[in-house]
Image 1 (tube, rainbow, N blue to C red):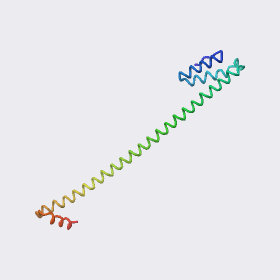
Image 2 (cartoon, one colour):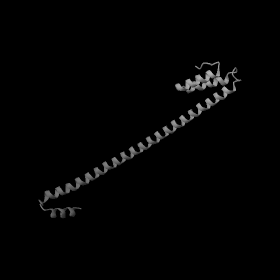
Image 3 (tube, one colour):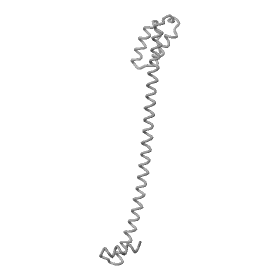
Image 4 (cartoon, rainbow, N blue to C red):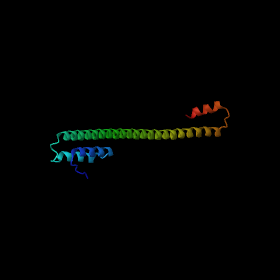
Length: 137
């Protein structure tokens, strides 16, 4: 929805105003309309400034696009690292719980043996208890 300006200077002012508002696409259309208009082909100075302005806008667009893509890539790589760290922690936690379950089972088995020994023979001294436990293993 660009309006055609009759003077190239007015079009440049309008392009500057649109650029300040952040409407880069409309700015490019406005400047391109200046270059397409047959009535203003003799204004070489204004064409030079419009081309310079177009190049400036395009370079800033590409630079911001590159910055944006780099930022997205950094964020994606960070997210992947966090996911891998989370997976590793989850595996470690599962292994620890398995180890805990295994050691708990071993403890229950050993405690069961000790309890049986204590019930069978009312041993009150630790020395006899340790000798009997070593005999069982």
